[in-house]
Image (cartoon, rainbow, N blue to C red; front, top):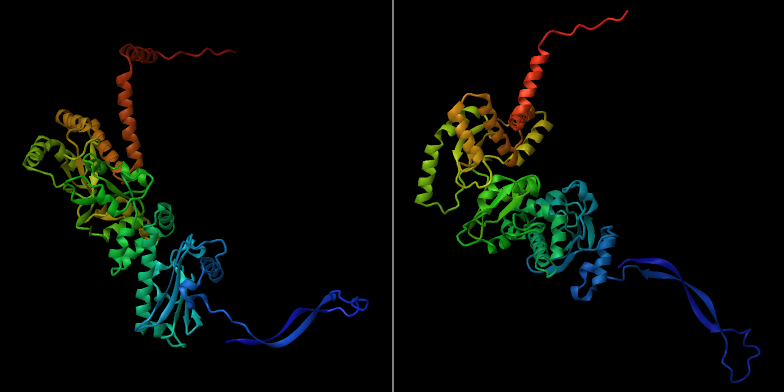
Length: 487
């Protein structure tokens, strides 16, 4: 206990002698209040710290008030908290909070080194609030207090790194944090987890990438947009519940935003069969999903990879594909020559429906979103941003589309004409943009579009207007008119 010498003033009521001089018998004496000053030692810390008290003795308002005062969060209400004690091989008490909003210091840098989230006490003596080893960095947003009797008072970073006690504390804190996440996710009010995910979802994604021990527990907590979810999130479990009969894999695509992800031709392959597609709309999403090979015995597959197998191919489908490859051999050969250095190869696809062509990556290729991210990093570090052959995708064409059929006719009639080359390159450019890639040369793309518009405009001009234009040109080609000079 801490005692300080302290003066205190108390007020006491005593009889007022002057007022009571004329007091008649039987009347109640009049009183007055006088100050009485006392000087004595007073115990200052009479109340136990909140984390040392039994959880059943602490009121909800006390938890909230402690959070606001201890972590200087006057305008934030904690969304969830857990108060527990571990006894046995290691004895410690802890109180953990999930903030109601993203702490200010983490808004600019999600792993800010100066952020103080866990306050460490040893035998009720404050030691430090910047020990990174006490919690993994993907739980940087969780705030709380840990008080251990098993750590030495002269604790240092070197001692902590070698301490088995700290390892046990770390595992327990992570487990309790994940339990809080599940409590919010299972709440009847779904908006609570939506708010939690919007604030701290990126930390859980990092946890899936970095924490192999807890990855299995974190995956069900992930949320993504999908081709069927609209403005709401969906989980892997919800995805599986909505799978049609016969679907044996979970499919996803990457893109910058939902709109760009949805316009990719590969989405047609899946939505036309009633399959749902998860949309990875941030660079971190793609790294996260690549760390998940399967969920509940369902493989997690990138729909933009070459050779997407929808597992319903039969002998008729294979025979149909062989016949199409043979029928459109000329167009495949022509495109591979014209697009040499731009694509690995050109193949016929029976899965596309509305798009004439699509670009897909090879089995070990990198998505266009990640390519842009890597290119930006390369330029920022002084490189030229050239990714070399990594940018070469596979061009899939839809033989049933009118554009592909027109191109096939043009190749057979005038293979070497500029019009045929422009038409083929324009189809490739459109496939690049809808598949999430960038057009390599905007100038050439603009010329090809203008050329197509010009040829269309000429076809739409009536024949008599064309004759009139030609006659005017003949008139203009005659002798020049000599101007009259006025003196």
